[in-house]
Amino acid sequence: MGILDRLTNRDKTVTVSAYKMISEHGEGFYSYNGNLYSSDIVRSCIRPKTQAIGKAVAKHIRKDEVTTQVNPEAYIRFLLEEPNPYMSGQMLQEKMANQLALNNNAFALILRDTNGLANAIYPINSDSVNALENQQGELFLRFLIKGKYYTFKYSDIIHLRRDFNDSDIFGSNPARALTQLMEIVTTTDQGIVKAIKNSNIIKWLLKFNNILREEDIKRQTKEFVNSFLNIDSETSGAAATDAKFDAQQVEPKNYVPNSAQTKGTVDRIYSFFNTNENIVQSSYNEDQWISYYEAEIEPVLVQMSNEFTRKLFSRRERGSGNKIIFESSNLNFASMQTKLNLVQFVDRGIMNPDEVRAILNMAPIPDGLGQAYIRRLDTAEIEGGEEDANKD
Image 1 (tube, rainbow, N blue to C red):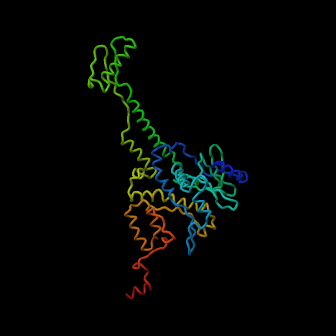
Image 2 (image 1 turned 90 degrees about the horizontal axis):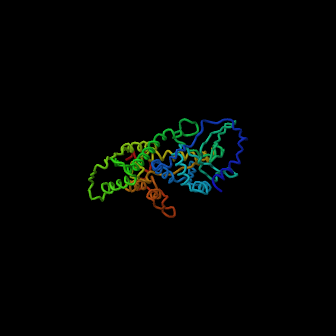
Image 3 (image 1 turned 60 degrees about the vertical axis):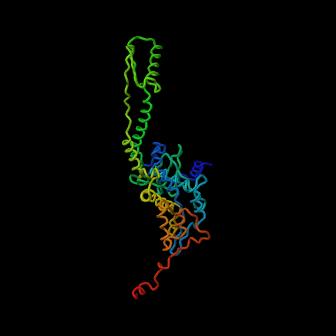
């Protein structure tokens, strides 16, 4: 059974008429079909971001005044690790990040069992989405997927958005901002291809002074080419003609965009996606990656954490300290010197050994021995507090 089959079955459980859809909320969202993802420039812009978001580790945290538990419920842990039979959590995160970058909107459907517990999450690729509202003020989304409509409660949809401005529900479509840029790139590429093809056009025009038969014209033209245009010719590039014909060189006039013009357009696309050449080509240094992480990746992880939390847990569960976090650290891309300096955080009780080992891509210490927080004796808490300090 495919994803669309599951959506179809799910849609049958939604009786649209029973909800009495009476109004559309907002202008709706229409997927940009400009084939952005087929552009090598666009794909290179968004790939570092989507891969970094995919590497973030989703965790269920339950925190109260005394304790903090990590992944206390097995069904939530399995849901985050394997949201559906077709993909892992990493792949789901990457797919939603791609959709968000291309459309400023990304959707995923939460399926629930008879007890209302989430048991699967499927990403949704749709041609258009409309927000509907019933008489009770409950919000629904109607998706157009491959010519068919599917309607789901908004409370069952994980919805990520970017450039949240015009609509109350959807992020602004990037088509208007990107269409002109992509037309420039396409025209530039086509101009270069045509210039290369036109380099093989006629370069010499032979004007015969006498009327000749067609076969004689072809024969003498061939002799001219073999004698003067062949790189192996004995005439060393010199040409001589008699009164039989006049030879005139034809200069091709092809416009080829220079490198500065091409780079200017590419830089504008980089700016649109908040990236640069160093990030795209993985030649960044530590400071450049940290800046990119904080500007592009961390906001998406925060939004994902908030959206997964409020859609997977009820208000009562959230009030009891349940939440979903996407754990990622920009220290993973730090230099080795910076990573080694983290040992100072271990002996001051800021980080435990296993946390530092994770940044160094090392396995945890067996038997949970790396979970303990360590403090040097000279950094221990002063007994007696302020009174002892005043005595000294």
